[in-house]
Amino acid sequence: MYKPQRLPTFQAVHRTRSFAIAARELDYTASAVSQQIAALEESTGLVLFEREARDRDRGRAPLRRTDQPIACQCRRSRLRGSPARPRLDAGLVYEYGLCPRRWPEDISRKPLLREDLLLLRPAEHDEPVRLADALWITSRADTAGAQSLSRLCAAAGFSPTIAFRSNNYDVVRELVVATGAVAVVPALAQVPDERVKAVPPTQESAHRTVFVAHRTGSSNLMLDEFLTSAHRSLPSGTDHLTPLS
Image (cartoon, rainbow, N blue to C red; front, side):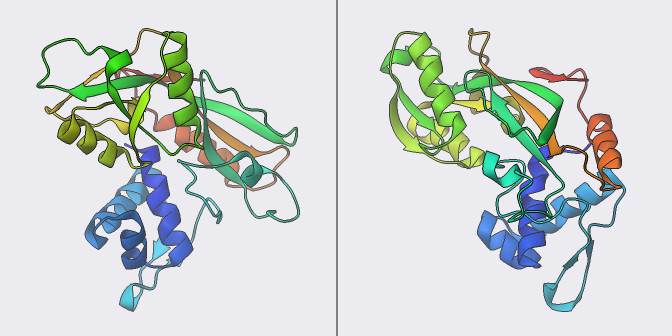
């Protein structure tokens, strides 16, 4: 199955032209990067990279180069159809329920997926967590995820005490286990872990929507194929994930 979280790995390899360098940047092993790229190629039916000696991989990319991981931090300015970035054809972008974004008029969006936000806490804690008194883990201060958490807590009548920040959801999960702090993460970021209990918050606005964004009137011949492939690969019958037409 196609997984959007593999796209940051794809882009790191495309930018660095090296599985090894991309692995160091992402704090993965080279083998893990290779496996993710192979899985992405299998799920899309495309040859994304031509393997060469000494790990010098030449990219044949359906998504063109950008300076930020497409699935994680595709900022608004990165998607403008301006002369400074004319090669960007499409990207996966997101919008938190409590953090609406304004998009340029020359950018079109097609909704792919709505994911619940999940509250993570250590599974070994049997007593209910008093969230107003808890220590919190969230993403970097200038991210929509951190802003969403602040607004969710404000709606519940308190301000969160931030103990740790990380944009790596694996690190966030390990911090929950190691420190007893709590966190809110998108459903796509959560993997089964018996050490962690994940429950959706009660607020209706506790969700995130994933879109495909592209320049209006784009003439790229692969855009329709990419959109079709993205919709076909969406999970169905999965808790906390709702495909959108």
